[in-house]
Image 1 (cartoon, rainbow, N blue to C red):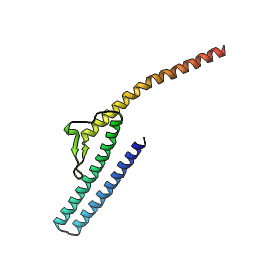
Image 2: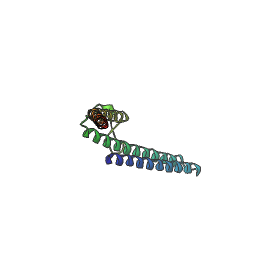
Image 3: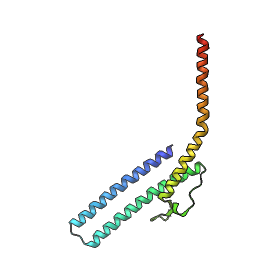
Image 4: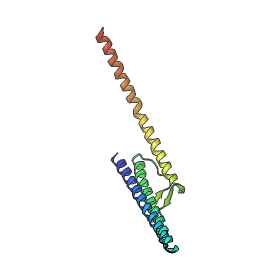
Amino acid sequence: MIEAIKFHFRIRSLLRRSQCADQKNREAISQAKSDGRSAEDIQSLEHDAIHDYREFDELIRESMTTFLTNRARKLILPLPSDDDAWSTGYLYQNRILTEKGIARLRSAIRQEKSERSHLWVTPVSLIIGLIGAVTALIGLLAGS
């Protein structure tokens, strides 16, 4: 639970920082155009903006990969093994899940959790029902 909260906080933080960087890059490009700077300078600023976007995208996907693979390992689920589920990071050259891999792993985790919850939901429901029936029977006998 705490791990999930930390994960969501990290993702929000990265998204916020990404939006701030994007806004600053747009403003810098706009300012450079209005100042009449050379096409080479503007192209350099656009390259920096693309680099920032890729960096934040990779950091977000890396965080998601870490979170989901840890969850899968705790549930003893196999990680996706096919090539379209994994890619190599642009900046850090680490192995990260693709969008397809993230979707598959999230689906497998949800399915496993659902199957595990069914193992205890039915017996608990039966026990609660029996407690209710016994309580009603005691109430009827006591009322007679």
